[in-house]
Image (cartoon, rainbow, N blue to C red; front, side):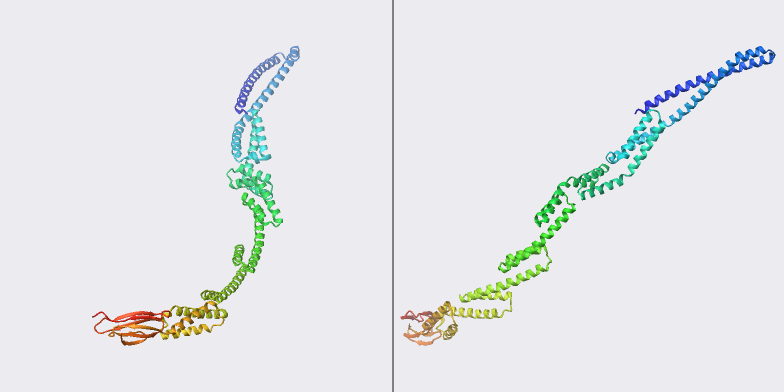
Length: 502
């Protein structure tokens, strides 16, 4: 619409109307002057020729109709002038509405541009269509110089725009709420529509962006949720959890998937918990204690504070301790049979560490310690046969041998030790003649035997073993000789004499 062209056309029309009015006004004035002149002539003739009837009749017959016709014309012209004047006043009143219409039009355009920023085209509906229709009607009225009507149209359109503008905050909130409800009800199209309206109003609204993204993915989320529900109905908890979890990966806020996942997880953990406990107890019955512990630990991960788990671990500890005690007791008895006394002692000590109140094990440990001590003594005396020439040592060896011989059901190792020591003691008890040579000047002393005196040659019976002979002579350095008497050597001799002067 070209409001300026319409204005120019209206101004030209106003000027033409003014000129015509002026011409009409001038003609009426001239007619009035002529009427006055004729009236003056008539009065003079009336006064001067009152008696002349023919003149009067002539005037009445000839002049009066003319005057009446002229008067009618003047009246018509006067009415035309008044009509034109009234039209002029109306035109001026209409023109006075033009700037108002222009101002309203400008304000309307500004308001339209402003509200378009909020995407009114998408949500304005009938009210927005009414605005456009009123604007179009206003433009039409303006172009036909009906400015007051145009102003009214623009004013009405503005009123509708204000109403639309005032509804924006509530509409935004309503669109967000409806979008959320549509998602929850699984209505993808409705959700998209509402969130698009919200984004048209506020393009950076994070809730709307997030909601639109959720709505666009809703089909897949619903599909996975239904799949999870199907698995759940079949008690396939792992598969159900996986389906629900995939749905939550797409839409973390999808409550149906979250609740489904929680239900499936709870059921799975309940069944898994019982399965693990059962497997653990079965492992205990099969003496697979490490496996049982693993099962119970997994059950504890599911229900950490469960009394059932605590009882399971207590049962495991008890059964494992009993099993270990039995096992170690059997091994210890086997070690005793095999005369592995140190191993048996270690096992019995381990048993007592598990349960220090088992009297039988205490007695067994005492018995084993005695056997260890006996075995060690036997070994010691057998390996120390060169010391058996000492009477005290010999008696100790005989005592140990007697203890060993009193053992009921001795094992092969003990029997061998008894035989060895018996033979050693027999040999150690038989003296061997040893010839001692000297210089008949050296005094000879044999430790544990006594002083043999001075001699040149002497034969002394000595039990097998190690001896120390000492030679002393005045003016000479003492000599000492360590020698061994062997039972296997029947011809043994030594020489003891002091040769180095002091």
